Length: 103
Image (cartoon, rainbow, N blue to C red; front, side):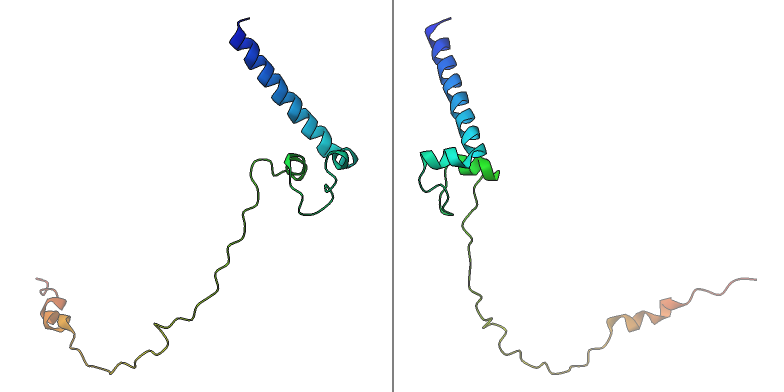
């Protein structure tokens, strides 16, 4: 094995060992409390608690809250005045009947 392959194997094995340690700490809360004294508090967040809660792929985003604003644009709707508009299609009434059938 070359030097770079040994280095890659060392990095891979140490990452695997760290993940196994985190899994074992997630399975044993007493052992996790030995590493972190505040492990029981709700604000505590580490790799072990993320694995234990199933959120190791993503964490919860902070909720964004925007206070509703009153709609100033539609506060007063003006009343429309009724206007009579002639239908433009009434002039085409001559096309409404077909020519008489030849018998």
